[in-house]
Image 1 (tube, protein in one colour):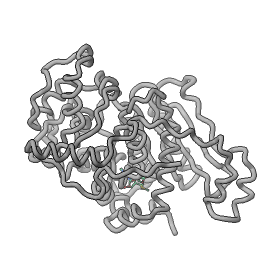
Image 2 (cartoon, rainbow over the protein chains, first blue to last red; image 1 turned 90 degrees about the vertical axis):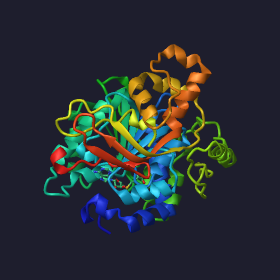
Image 3 (cartoon, each protein chain N blue to C red; image 1 turned 45 degrees about the horizontal axis):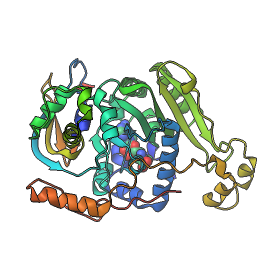
Image 4 (cartoon, helix red, strand yellow; image 1 turned 180 degrees about the vertical axis):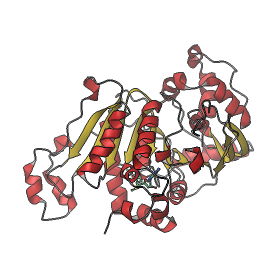
Length: 290
Length: 122
Ligand SMILES: C[S@@+](CC[C@H](N)C(=O)[O-])C[C@H]1O[C@@H](n2cnc3c(N)ncnc32)[C@H](O)[C@@H]1O
């Protein structure tokens, strides 16, 4: 199947039907969760248990943002597809959602955001979907505004599917021009299936903290050899466990659970406040990962 | 959309120099319970534009925030509870955000502000 980016503009490609299909595939849910976990790990937020305010750029139906919530963080999600955002609403994601186009720049105050992730979205910026679109201008507007809104020393981590080496260089080039330091982390570079690319960008002058982190599975040759046999799940077996992140310390111990939320909502209702109706998604148990 | 997010947003229209804070036109406001986390509030406090938060809270009908605040207040549980409620539990569900400089309205539907710019605003 050809890449979605070349089929149609994102707000058209991700229509109601596609948004639903995307978010009901357990395979996609699982992949996006893993990519988001890794991106969050690469953000290397201080390990002090304090929730941070993060951005999720191209948040879609909230699959990536849910990983941020599970780790206790607050987030703001931006997406250009109304259909995807509607599915995020249905799923009662905990982050705030915004309809917007990253290529127009982010309208966010300077220095207030603690970190940004973007999962499988930034490569869309390289397309000219309208006659008025000039990818270079859009990349410039996006990275410039992102750089400004991040706190000094904060990171942005983008998992991307660039179409070509040139496209990856184009994206990275605009990030550097905006002032970011950093580079590309390629996990499992020898595997065609598991290979994943992350742009790891740090806001501020180069220093120890801007050094690009180490990739996973770089020197595990057996991976590339096993590649042709078996499915993706089996292949991960040869990646030794030391590469796995320790189970993240959950920031909000356990959350208070569905009962607490339902009770609290009832109390607010009794006080005469406007409170949304309860659905099966309300404070549902989040799937524990690992 | 919560007031936390409102406090970070500014109008991104080409040529606008002072797009913050966006004015709030509230048609429907919801409250949703969120776990109370003082660490988050303390960490967030220095980045909050207080005046904008007080204005936004009033615009959605919440008047419990003091007109001025400083970090010493973060020791008061009462203050933290009010801050928590204003930042994280109040949602602008229907209404609009209005650019303070141009008057351009960004509609908010089902809690989602539509910040897409027209071509001549980019
Ligand atoms: C493959 S989906 C990923 C969604 C989500 N991050 C996840 O992990 O499930 C890519 C998303 O990027 C969004 N997107 C593409 N171009 C965009 C743009 N210019 N501004 C904002 N979002 C965009 C699409 O609408 C789509 O929801």
